[in-house]
Image (cartoon, rainbow, N blue to C red; front, top):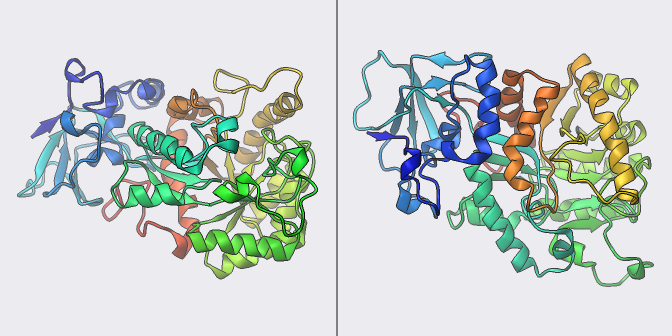
Length: 449
């Protein structure tokens, strides 16, 4: 039988069990308020079947796949969809799937390794539905100038940290993540499952255009910009170019497509109020994605940007901080997803320098967040959660704490449900382009860990 590693025995160089990770302290406190004020075993998240109880000597790498089924006992269960903890259950895991959720009073299965949870809580792995695998932990200057090999090495290190924070799945919303995804899937590097979008497709002067002014005007047959060349973003103007760039991402293995539909904070040439791309250009992207069995999501804040994208067939709005009541009503009527973030002025805000255009855009966006979540709740929008950490290596460690800030708008059980089964429902919208067949986000027989 295995038990959770005591804190005193954890080596300085790694975790014996990720429930002792500082990144979980704030999330633990959040859950205690809802669930009988008892401690929360984030180390036994769905990732915990193979991660939480690694032997110390394996903490720096990928453990060998278990040769026997694993039974988790002496636990309290948050199954990803209930508003209370469930007691008296035993969870049996075989390979990377849940074999059974059974009463502890039932006969114990034979030939299994038993893990005693010590009365802690087991839950599904957390899901971040707006993550940047290759962009989160690298400064913007390096992202725009460094060799893609270096960018991938930084991203690989961060992927390991992401997994150890309990995030077992991420929806990557722009960046050259295909190579790292392959390395993770093949066992070369520890990290979360990645649903990749590939390069964010943007119009000239749009949210994904990070070229320098001297690179414009660009000759029709000129070389690609650095961002285009490494697969970070892709400039496309007109339906034909949009179709070409969408099809390129699908060729690489994109599980969904992302376009920039409006002004952004990080980008330098587009005021936040502008709408980007026409209905015809959105329709071109959507037709290509739907031919491939998947969908298009867009970066958009404002009513015009959101509504134009929806008329073009887009099925998911990422951000939406400046939406109005009419827009929320349209989204509700058409069943459009909102994948939003807790963008407020707090310790996780990553503010731009005062007096800059980026900072002024950021303040406008922050001011709309409360309204956006209020409308999402009023109209019962399908609402997913993500962090959207970008180019800030000091911020990624707060991924779990940023989830906890959602308590400004939602109850604790609603937050955890959003970050597990609800986010999993958005991942499933990739349909046949889902890179990991099977279900995630819930502790239930047949689901992936």
